[in-house]
Image (cartoon, rainbow, N blue to C red; front, side):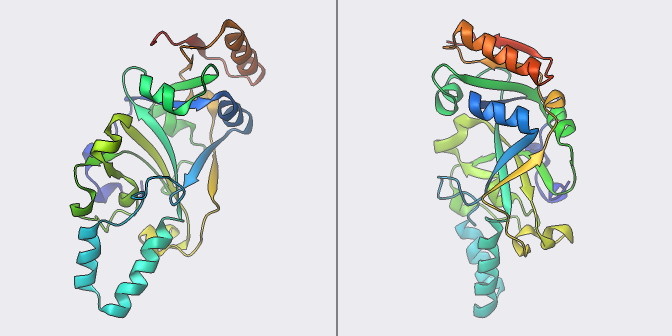
Length: 242
């Protein structure tokens, strides 16, 4: 897996770790019907630190490179944010009330329960251009050493105070000639579209479908009918969290 040998192994999850994906019914329908997972480009997130090089890393590059090479390298580093796409999941042995509130609708929210092994098996074209890893939460983003050997590193760290409650796992996808030839992704020549959709097998992915704790009996019937029509034979249950 690309980047794995460069990064701390503690941030690569065990296969049996339980994972949730919180989403609205419309997004759930799109995932199931299209058989494709939606990943957002690395420069499209609201967090201004997303995929940004740390101050420590910038200063280190400035010490290594002369002025012209530093500027060229900086442009390549910025390009990396547009050559990576991300899907965000929640790690936990139980549901999260904050995730229900933040990422789903009032009564039509859905949580997909799965595990890391099932995610990997569901990715139809699982290969070296994908990385599944946990977020590393930092007290101070700017003083962290940028691990140049891992092209996904800037997308694997977040500020602890603001985001630790998300307990996030990411599916990270990188594309471009630099990636194909094994070079760091920030040297990629191709720019991905604003979103990337990669083939996925929903039947292999989903262990259980959980409906919002505020959902109605009619919504249960709606979801059950839809999954049956799509050939998804998994348990559907209403959350009892709230």
